[in-house]
Image (tube, rainbow over all chains, first blue to last red; front, side, top):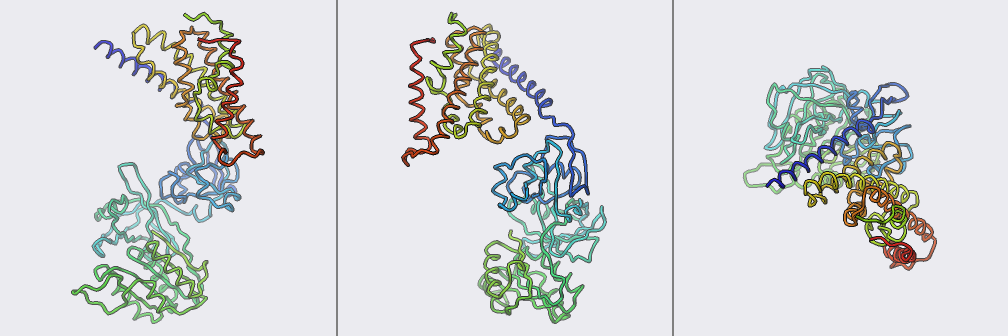
Length: 364
Length: 196
């Protein structure tokens, strides 16, 4: 009995001693002093206590670069160009970087630690990314698992984005806060609000959080991010293909286009399973009556049940696209939906003479 | 008490009783990290450092805490805790002063924790009833011996890169064979000194 107690005491005592020694060592050894972080040839300069990752340094100073995995090194989004002072390229980064990127000094910000003065280059528009506080204005169910969430911006009160860009919503989870990307579905001219279209993913952290939001609750997000670049040339036709919650960036693009170019040609294809999954169809049909150059096609992939009424297309959406789209060089395509859909649609678009550079997509 | 002179223990633990070549402890990192001579040197130095200090600390804890309290049975868990903590310390040290070595060693740096040669040195020290000075030099010697063995191996492997090794033997196979031959060469010294 006594031996047991002394054994436990001795073990605990020695462990505490070792831990204390390590803490002191960490204070001494892992202290890298203040380092200067220099962005884009000096357009932003700040001092940072060394020892932490570049990603958290940038977030601390309100520079929001995209990151979906929260710094675990598994998404490969947080790419920045390190011009000097980043240390050697790590084995954890190489899978996400092409040879060209490696030569240009591109690194994953979540893996680089700030230990000395460091010089970076990030795309100019990422410096424009801000952190937004917003209030839920309304939540509306579109289908059994898709909700439309309208947010009024509180601080800052305005957001400037290109059609098809996304924001990163901050959702709390048992393992700490996570950021998840959602496309903005409200058009670009509505500067004081942001609308999201969210499909509930079973077990999904952010989609569960967003689906449980009530009117008046506050929410935080960063943005805008995204590589979708709509051509400014009104003679360039636009093809939009989406499925499910892939509606979000597409709705934004459609309304933004018809606000600026009332006669621009837009071909919109939307794939759903059954009539129960259809939403926004009436609104788009109204828009098509107003703008003759707008064509909208919904297609059901599941066979019709007895109680369903449908006189539109059936079958997968890429088949509708193949039937209805005329081959043309000067058109841009924006796709948003599940990976198999994107792959099938990309193939059809290439047959229709679209160039790779003119096909933009979001896979999820 | 063991009456072997300190100097004999030191030389013997490097050559005749080399912890890697005579006792075959610490083989895993030896096999994997002996590709390049600079990495091998780095790991060897880190192991030597850890081994020297853990034998000293373990000696003090064993003789001044565990024996008076009759808690010798705790030695394994305490020794391993000391080694683990010390490796953490070395990791911080190396990351600070030699980031290149830090990335070259990669996962093998924290894995020194489970390098059996290090625990082996502490256990031999208890088994052979060394005093403090003897333990210190035994730890230092064993570390140098391990570093010597891995550096030799790395040198040979760098040369072997140019030789025509039969396909089936490439990699660990030929390393095992060569290790055996080096071990036999080291045993040629065995008659000179004896450790018990």
